[in-house]
Amino acid sequence: MVFTPIDRKTWKRENTYEHFVKNVPCTFSMNVNIDITHFSLELKSHDLKLFPSFLYALSIIVNRHEEFRMAYDKNGNLGYYDISHPSYTVFHEETECFSTLSTEYDENFHAFYAKSQEDTGECRKNGYPSPCERKNIFHVSCIPWANFTGFNLNLQKGYEYLSPIFTIGKFSQDRDKILLPLALQVNHAVCDGFHAARFINELQEWVENFSHDNSY
Image (cartoon, rainbow, N blue to C red; front, side, top):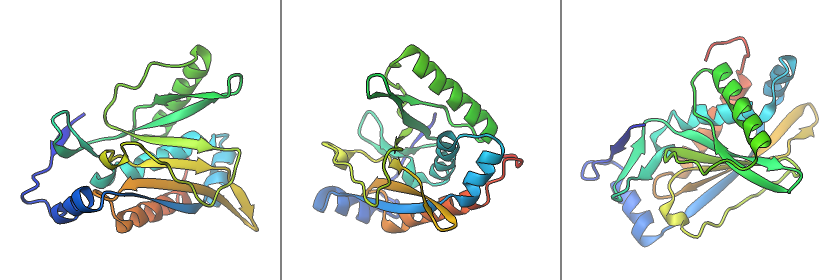
């Protein structure tokens, strides 16, 4: 894990960052439907699960762009991590509570998928894991019981939290398409609508071109 401080004297986003930190602190969310028709069929043909596979897809796009890996170090300096790992939830039916765990990101799809399944299995077997000590994470949660058109989180210290937060809903059938609701919440100080839209577009393109047989 490498944290790179930003030289704010030369940073092209400095004025925008200052505006949304001091004048108009805010976060925003974007709710979209991702067309996973091809993605779902490809997964089913190889007996692969949707959630860990989509978790990988999110990780791919997060790690393409600095604005989704932004954070403050222990001294309050703004910067970004060289890599960010997904932190996600595992639901326990017997207690109706969930655990949060993190799987180390791996560029290889098959390696990441196997490790996430291993981590999830250990979590279900042993109960609630210790809190994740990684600083370089982004959060993903899933609500597979409901299809939503809007979702928003209200964080007590949200204006100080820079990592993106993703929430996945229950997929639905729309004629010949399979649609997966996805909410993306970001801090406006480091991410604009342009960046959020680029993320969504690149994610859509990735799932449309997903092939189990390719090397990642």
